[in-house]
Each structure stands twice: as structure tokens, then as C-alpha cells.
Length: 315
Ligand SMILES: Nc1nc2c(ncn2[C@@H]2O[C@H](COP(=O)(O)OP(=O)(O)O)[C@@H](O)[C@H]2O)c(=O)[nH]1
Ligand SMILES: [Mg+2]
Image (cartoon, rainbow, N blue to C red; front, side, top):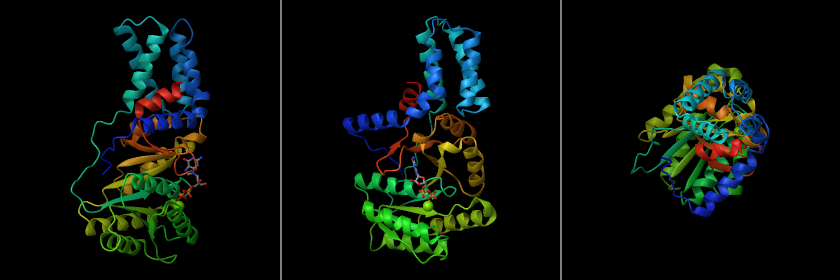
């Protein structure tokens, strides 16, 4: 569904500047030290040891850190790289290659209604990300509808309604405690009929401590979507909080057991010094990061661009 919209050059430059700014913590953290490492005149065995250490500390994950260093060494040898800036460029490329997603985004046209399910633990930034996505697609001319299927807490419904008002997007909700499957059923009906929506985004509950019930609930919501709309949900995006580091990986594994996660929205990249979690996610989960959250405002959001990301963290 995320057929790429070609962005105007100025918007691209704006996104890049925003990403740069939001990653200042990461840049000042371990990745910045990696940058500094390759400012010295000579690359020695000690440089590689330190690189490995810094990659691990930045949440890249041990296996990935080892792999990057191995590949870099092999490449330096093979290409007979001598100058420190060439080694650094090779590292840049190795890191970016970890993030390349070869498989195309799901595009199933013509489709009347696209359904996107948003899952993740409470506090990860689901509702905020939904508002950001809604605004993102609204700006691109899509009619967006939101479904408040996190019915467990009244506050969750209210919060979505507030975001709906702020972004000028319709929210389909029922009373607290209502069956999430029923909310989604109504929302699909409404989107197809009176609202004529292009895109329905579904907010879901995220109580991981009642894991069994949560997973059952998600499975049910999923099957309601599948029954009503061909191939729905067309995307299931898992929201992960970048500041939770390696914990995000184990959370993701739980969610993957219940629903087929097709992409990640990684939030709070502005609040962590360890942006390396991006590499760990793609490597260990095999799921691409599709969007990143870089702040609390609806405009603090970008499509994930691996090359721009690597350049922004290494400085
Ligand atoms: N700094 C920062 N804060 C965020 C971001 N995304 C969400 N938040 C904050 O994280 C908190 C939880 O967000 P919420 O959307 O309510 O999470 P939910 O429980 O998963 O729906 C709120 O205070 C948000 O403002 C982000 O990208 N950066
Ligand atoms: Mg919420």
C-alpha cells in the first residue's frame, strides 16, 4: 500500500534536516565515537576492536557487530584500502547494506480500501504514530479514517479522538470495554460506505502482561479485517520504542507470534543515544523499518531512508 509518493526536492531536504537534528543524541553517542575513531591516521587491529565494542554498545546486537567488523576487514584487505577515509566510507556502506530491503512494498491495486493495523505495547507511541501516519497520508490526498480498537481504556479512545480532531480525520469509536472486533467491523463498514475512505488505520490495545488475551484479541481483529476486505490487513505495523533497546526485539518476537508483522514504526529516535537498534531489528526480525518517529509533533515523522540514516548517525 505504501506505493512511494515521489517527494518534492524541498520536502526531501526538509526530511533529511529533521532526521539529522533528531539523531543528534545518537550522533553524540556511540556512533559519533565511531566517526571519531576513523579520524585517526591509521587503522589498526585496536581500531577494529574498538569499533566492535562501540557497535555493541549502540545496540546493534553482538552478532551483527561481529559480522560488520568481519566484512569490513575482509573488504579493506580485498580492496587494499589504505586511507582512513576510505575505510570509513566502506563502513558506511556495510552499515547501509544491512538495511537494504529487497522485497517491494505490498501494492495491490486497484483496491477500494486499504487497512493498516497498528500493534505494539502501551507507551511505545502507537496512538501518536497513528496521528502522524494519518497526517502523512492526508497530505498526500488520501481520505483517512481511524478505528479506536484499543477499547480497554477510556483514555485511549479519547486520545485518538483528540488526534482525529487535530488532524481533521474521522474516528470510529464505541464505548470503553466494547469488543475491538466490533469496532473494526463498524469502521470498515463506515469507511466503505458513507465515509468513502481510502485508508483505515486501526489502533489496538497493547497490554503485554495479559499476553494470551492480547494475542487472542489481535488475532480476532485481524480476522475481522480479513473477512471484510480482500487481503486485509494490507499492512500490520509494529510500533517499537527505540529507547527500550534490545527489549524492543523480544517484544517484537511476541507480537510476531500472533500477527504477521509487515513493517516497523520505530519511535523516539530523538530520545536515544543508541540508534543501533535499527540494525538489530532488521537483522534479527527480518522486518523492515518503514517509518521513524523523531519527536512528539505529528510532523516529527519520516519514511525510513537507510542511506540517509547511516549518514546522519555517523555524522
Ligand atoms: N520524543 C518522542 N516521544 C514520542 C514519540 N512518539 C510518541 N512519543 C510519546 O510517547 C508517549 C506515549 O505515546 P502514545 O502514542 O500514547 O503511546 P501508546 O500507548 O502506544 O498509544 C507520549 O508521551 C508521546 O508523546 C517520538 O517519536 N518521540
Ligand atoms: Mg494508545
